[in-house]
Length: 343
Image 1 (cartoon, rainbow, N blue to C red):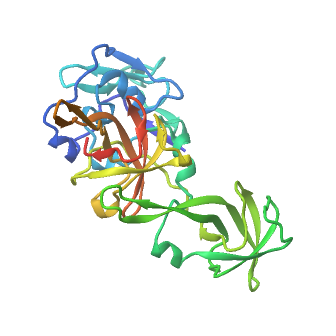
Image 2: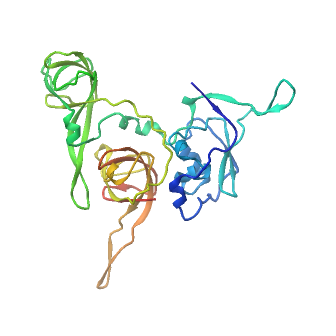
Image 3: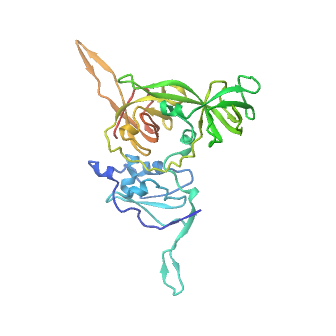
């Protein structure tokens, strides 16, 4: 599959949320006049070379709503030029390309083609790929469509690829299933309300025969799998291509969980936050992270120290009351209980 790219600025109108910003994006003190895109770059990383707030790059590209949902328009070898008057970012000619003469000898802009799978991604997709198809948050609705493992062929506790399991309540329209176990509750640190239960991914299985109970074969086993573990249909792979933008609704919540069960983490780590679809969050939204500095006592007085904004994260998957985000910028470690608000 190929994609046609022209060497003109992209966009017609500013993103709606960008219009709410009080000031235009600020340029970094050492911003270059141009940059040549390389393999392995991300749009966020490229923008950090030019902007103090890298997530605001859709504003300087002047992207419209449709382009926000598919921002893959930059490829290795292309030159990005900074216009400091806006500021604006524009695409220059790729290395080695130029205007080509046509039949009458006149110069015409040359259109070139590049495979779309070589396009530069918004964020490092490898960091979030495992979280795009697996069940992450379980609630009442999730369990309504869950199947249950009732027996294993060998009676062994730990199953490996190729082993056989038997399950009930298997939908005959689904052939491939994710195996999981409900683990810790996701609790809002503020009101202590349970927002859902995080799922522990154990592996996957494929239907061999629709018997009663249904016979399945393990196709991946990353953790111990056994009787009473649950199964949900494996979702189609989600293509995450959203550009970063600010939430329209007011977000005021907390960091409620860190993947791998640790209490603190850093850049490019996946976190869960206590807000979701019900709060107006959607993939691509950027949130700011604030650290609680605690209190200090001086003499007879106690002072509540001001919070410090120390980083930002980009939401990539959203459930009803919980969302998952990847930390993109941080000064120090992110900790469970940190405040999450609008950027």
